[in-house]
View 1: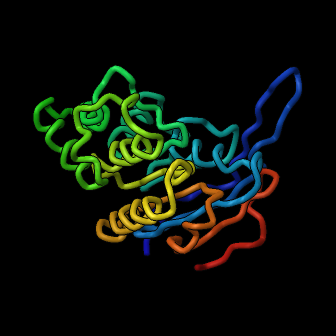
View 2: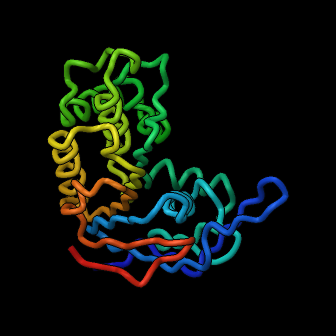
Length: 229
């Protein structure tokens, strides 16, 4: 399989209270097309920061991030933003739904950012909501949904524009075991059918079985333990 994500010697430091915190310490990481990789490790080990530099929402201080042949550090910010809009789907731990919009309107946002007209974008969003089991909630605002339902809306939004790279930060954190399994089955099927790449950060041992490969992070580095599932 082709390498679609190549991280080479990525370093990232944050400054807080006058002190340097080394979050990524020369990380090397890669993922293939059609692969679902899970990144595990203790809180503070750099997992979410690694996701952020892969997705282009955060610049690394040094090293390189190559996604589908594009070296993100070589691109100006507007090009990185355009790349994210077209090629990356995000599933956030905190959902980040817009409270004044309906579920369908929230899910349609990636399509609108990619130039779709409002009506077909909403129709596509409704179809995606039906796929995650929320057909009856399309006109509800997020505040009318449970935490698990909001998570499914966020997942629908991440998948609606058929991105080549799906970035997931604790995608099943608000879901019960049965719903979490169904969502992971859908995400995995989406990756396999379309040769998409899925990278998941999780503490949820219930979903480890869905990984093609698991990578452990510790203290800002990929540890020696890399196992195939």
